[in-house]
Image 1 (tube, rainbow over the protein chains, first blue to last red):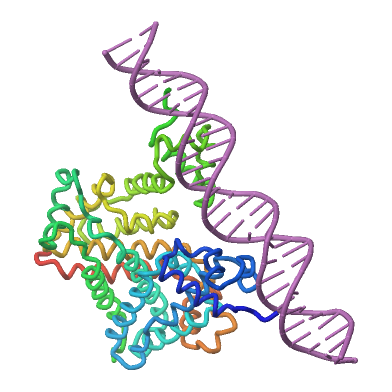
Image 2 (image 1 turned 135 degrees about the vertical axis):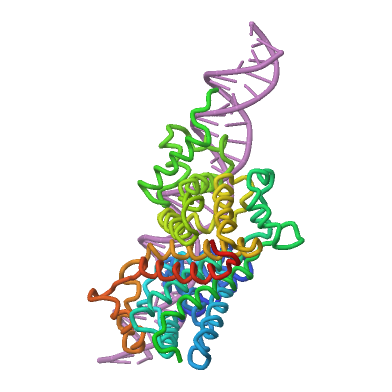
Length: 207
Length: 207
DNA sequence: TGAGATAAATGAACGTCATTCATTTATTGG
DNA sequence: CCAATAAATGAATGACGTTCATTTATCTCA
């Protein structure tokens, strides 16, 4: 019997479903329906729903822009990469808990990204031993920031406990005229600058 | 009828259940059983399982050590706070997606932490407008690092794709004699130093 | 051409969950 | 002491992921 769809089709359908209905809408039943097939048929192509999530994750990784590492100065490459990375996974936060713990073995897109990033760090003059930890630190920050990007504008509204937290409340107010002004982008930029400066200092022969 | 247990008891039981069976073992049925009660009885005290998670989260927040901010120099306070924060949530990663997006309104423990941290930043000479974004950036890093702390030792094993990723594979190998040596702690420390240095530079009147 | 072998799809069935609801039971305040 | 209220019960519901025996289509090769 001709396969209605292989892993590629499943991945594409899953992505479309996620973009339309979010991760709550991504059920095996809905996925099968969007492919015109019975739910059980999916199990001829993937071994579990987690498998589907891994496929989606790999696909997203291929969309992260790490092109700067072969052309731009290190600082700008990192900035471009980090923004792209965060932007993509901010809309896929449920995947983060999967990625962060998923071995890269057999994840070609992910490996390709790491290879390019590693090369960029080498070219910039980083000692080999510092590179992986630096990437890990940057990724941790990017993943955390991706969650953050989804926070509601009123996340720091101290409500009726404002009186007991005067300094915090005042610091929040200082951010802008709007009552609740969540600085996700501002904060991301600030922390990224700090990381780039701090990690950049590890270079032995800056280029 | 006398309440068998209020929110405090539910929170404690949930924490115990999580520590024994993990987050997969935290079901409303198991929670009720551990309290000697029918599952439906829980709904007289909490409105949903998400509610239970919020209770747990608040409880954990009260265990984060932010005491340094009233006594230690800023750098050391941040370090102490960050290590404590990461250590606690590394074993509660499923909560991170909840916290990161949860308004602090009516979360007294969380607010108390923010107030203390804000005071520490003020005392260290940070301009008010920089404080919240700095905290947000640090928290993003801490949350991401908490995920990381759970990664398996072989997460960077490039397997049979090692040939196509020579620089990356070599960088991973350079970390140690063991074949796969995941540097979660090393990376956390490195990134934290970078953030502390970078953010610390924002102070106008370092103390 | 035709007979396996194989890959893929089906539909029914399971087990697990969170959650709801009508009802019963205990406690407390006036 | 009665009425109001708070809490617990057990049955039922509806998602959901997953399994499995069976059927159906396609491919291979003699």
